[in-house]
Each structure stands twice: as C-alpha cells, then as structure tokens.
Length: 278
Image 1 (cartoon, rainbow, N blue to C red):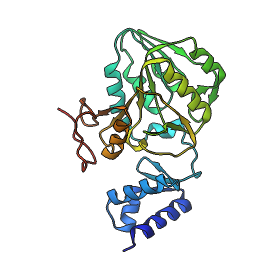
Image 2: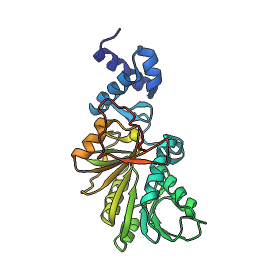
Image 3: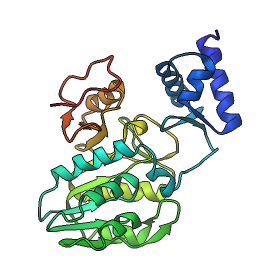
C-alpha cells in the first residue's frame, strides 16, 4: 500500500502521461475509496498541478478548453436540476440576461413556452432554444464569435451591454471559487461576464458541483457581492461553506426531485450528497 504522498505523485504522473484520469479508475488502481481519490485530486488541484474535471482530473494544458458540444453531455442531471431552480425564480414579464454555455442552454430550454419574457444572450445555443418560443422576445449580443464556446465576445458585445439593464442575470462558469469568482479559459469571456454582472438587479452563477473551488485556467471574473451561487446536491459541504462564509448566497438544486434547499439550512459535515429537502 502506497503512502498518501506517493499515491498522489503516481496520480499526477498518470494524468500527465494519459492526459485524463477518472476517480473510478484511480480508486480501482490504488485500492482506495473514491472519497480518498477526490481528496487527493482536490489537493493536487489546490497545488496547481492538476485541473479537476467532472469525475476526475486532467493534466494542465492537456485539454485547454472543452467545446460546448463536449460539455453538454457532462453532469447532465445536475445542470438540468440547476436550470429548473433558476427557471423557478423568474417572473412573467421580466427582462433577463442569459449567458452562453451548457447550463445556460438547459435554462433556455426550461423557458420555452414560459410566457411573456425578454431574454438577451451572447450564446448561440440559447438563441437556438428560444428562437421559436412564443411570447419570449430574444435579443443577441453581437461581437466576435468564439467557436469553442459558441458565444459572442468582444467590444461590440460590451458596448451593447452599456445600453441595457436586467431584472436577473444568469452566468455560467468553467469553474468558480469563493475567493476569486468565475474562472474561464479566455480573458474576453471573463471581461464580458464582469460587465454582465454589473447590469443585473439579481445575479446568479449557475455552476454544477464539479466546478466548485477549481482553478483550471488563469482568467478570472471578479464578482462584487451580493450574488447567488446555484449548484446541485452533489456539492462538497466544505466548498459550500466557503462560499457562505464569503457572503455568497448559495442555493442547492435537487437532482432527485423538483424541490430545492437553501444553504442557510444546516449541511452535515460528513454528507457528500445532502438529501433534498421535502
């Protein structure tokens, strides 16, 4: 049996060699629990040696940014639970700003047939979801198209935002931390997200539990309080507590039912997956 330090070194070298390592494979390889592997990966991530992914980790630089097509299939249940929660707080007649990305696309799907609503977005997938939705008026932020994320960024999008304001802003993220905000692969995206956050009366970050506390890239969008993190019931309670301690409101969307719970309710320290509220 390897020591913890030796095991982590092996995990690091395996990820560097193969580019990607899953929790399940590492658990079998080293004959330890999945929880032990997750702690190892969290430590390696905090040291800047590996980047966490949904279900595992990857070597930094091995896969610099996943495409929107790849991300749509990741954490599917969690993203759609988050989307259902987000749709539940929107009121008829509101003017909302909806980011690009897979979770934002799931929210756009929830809004089809919503009723009277005005939606502005830089995301092509959001436009496609809402293009033929009766009662939903859609505006697009123009600009330079980033093919990998299927979103518009740049000065044209930023200039358009200066003439708008919104009841609610919903932002996606490659990762999010309590200390530094939203982490993205591209500085133009983080700049746009910061501007979008400034234009909303209420700001929500939609991030599934695999993205909490990670630092896979070096571009950041700082978010002034108040804002709300919407995540799922697979969230690590330690990570959830960090956001709450930083003054962030956190909402937990249930992946098993159409119910939701607030982080202001106690979350057991030993609960990896808090039970959904009644």
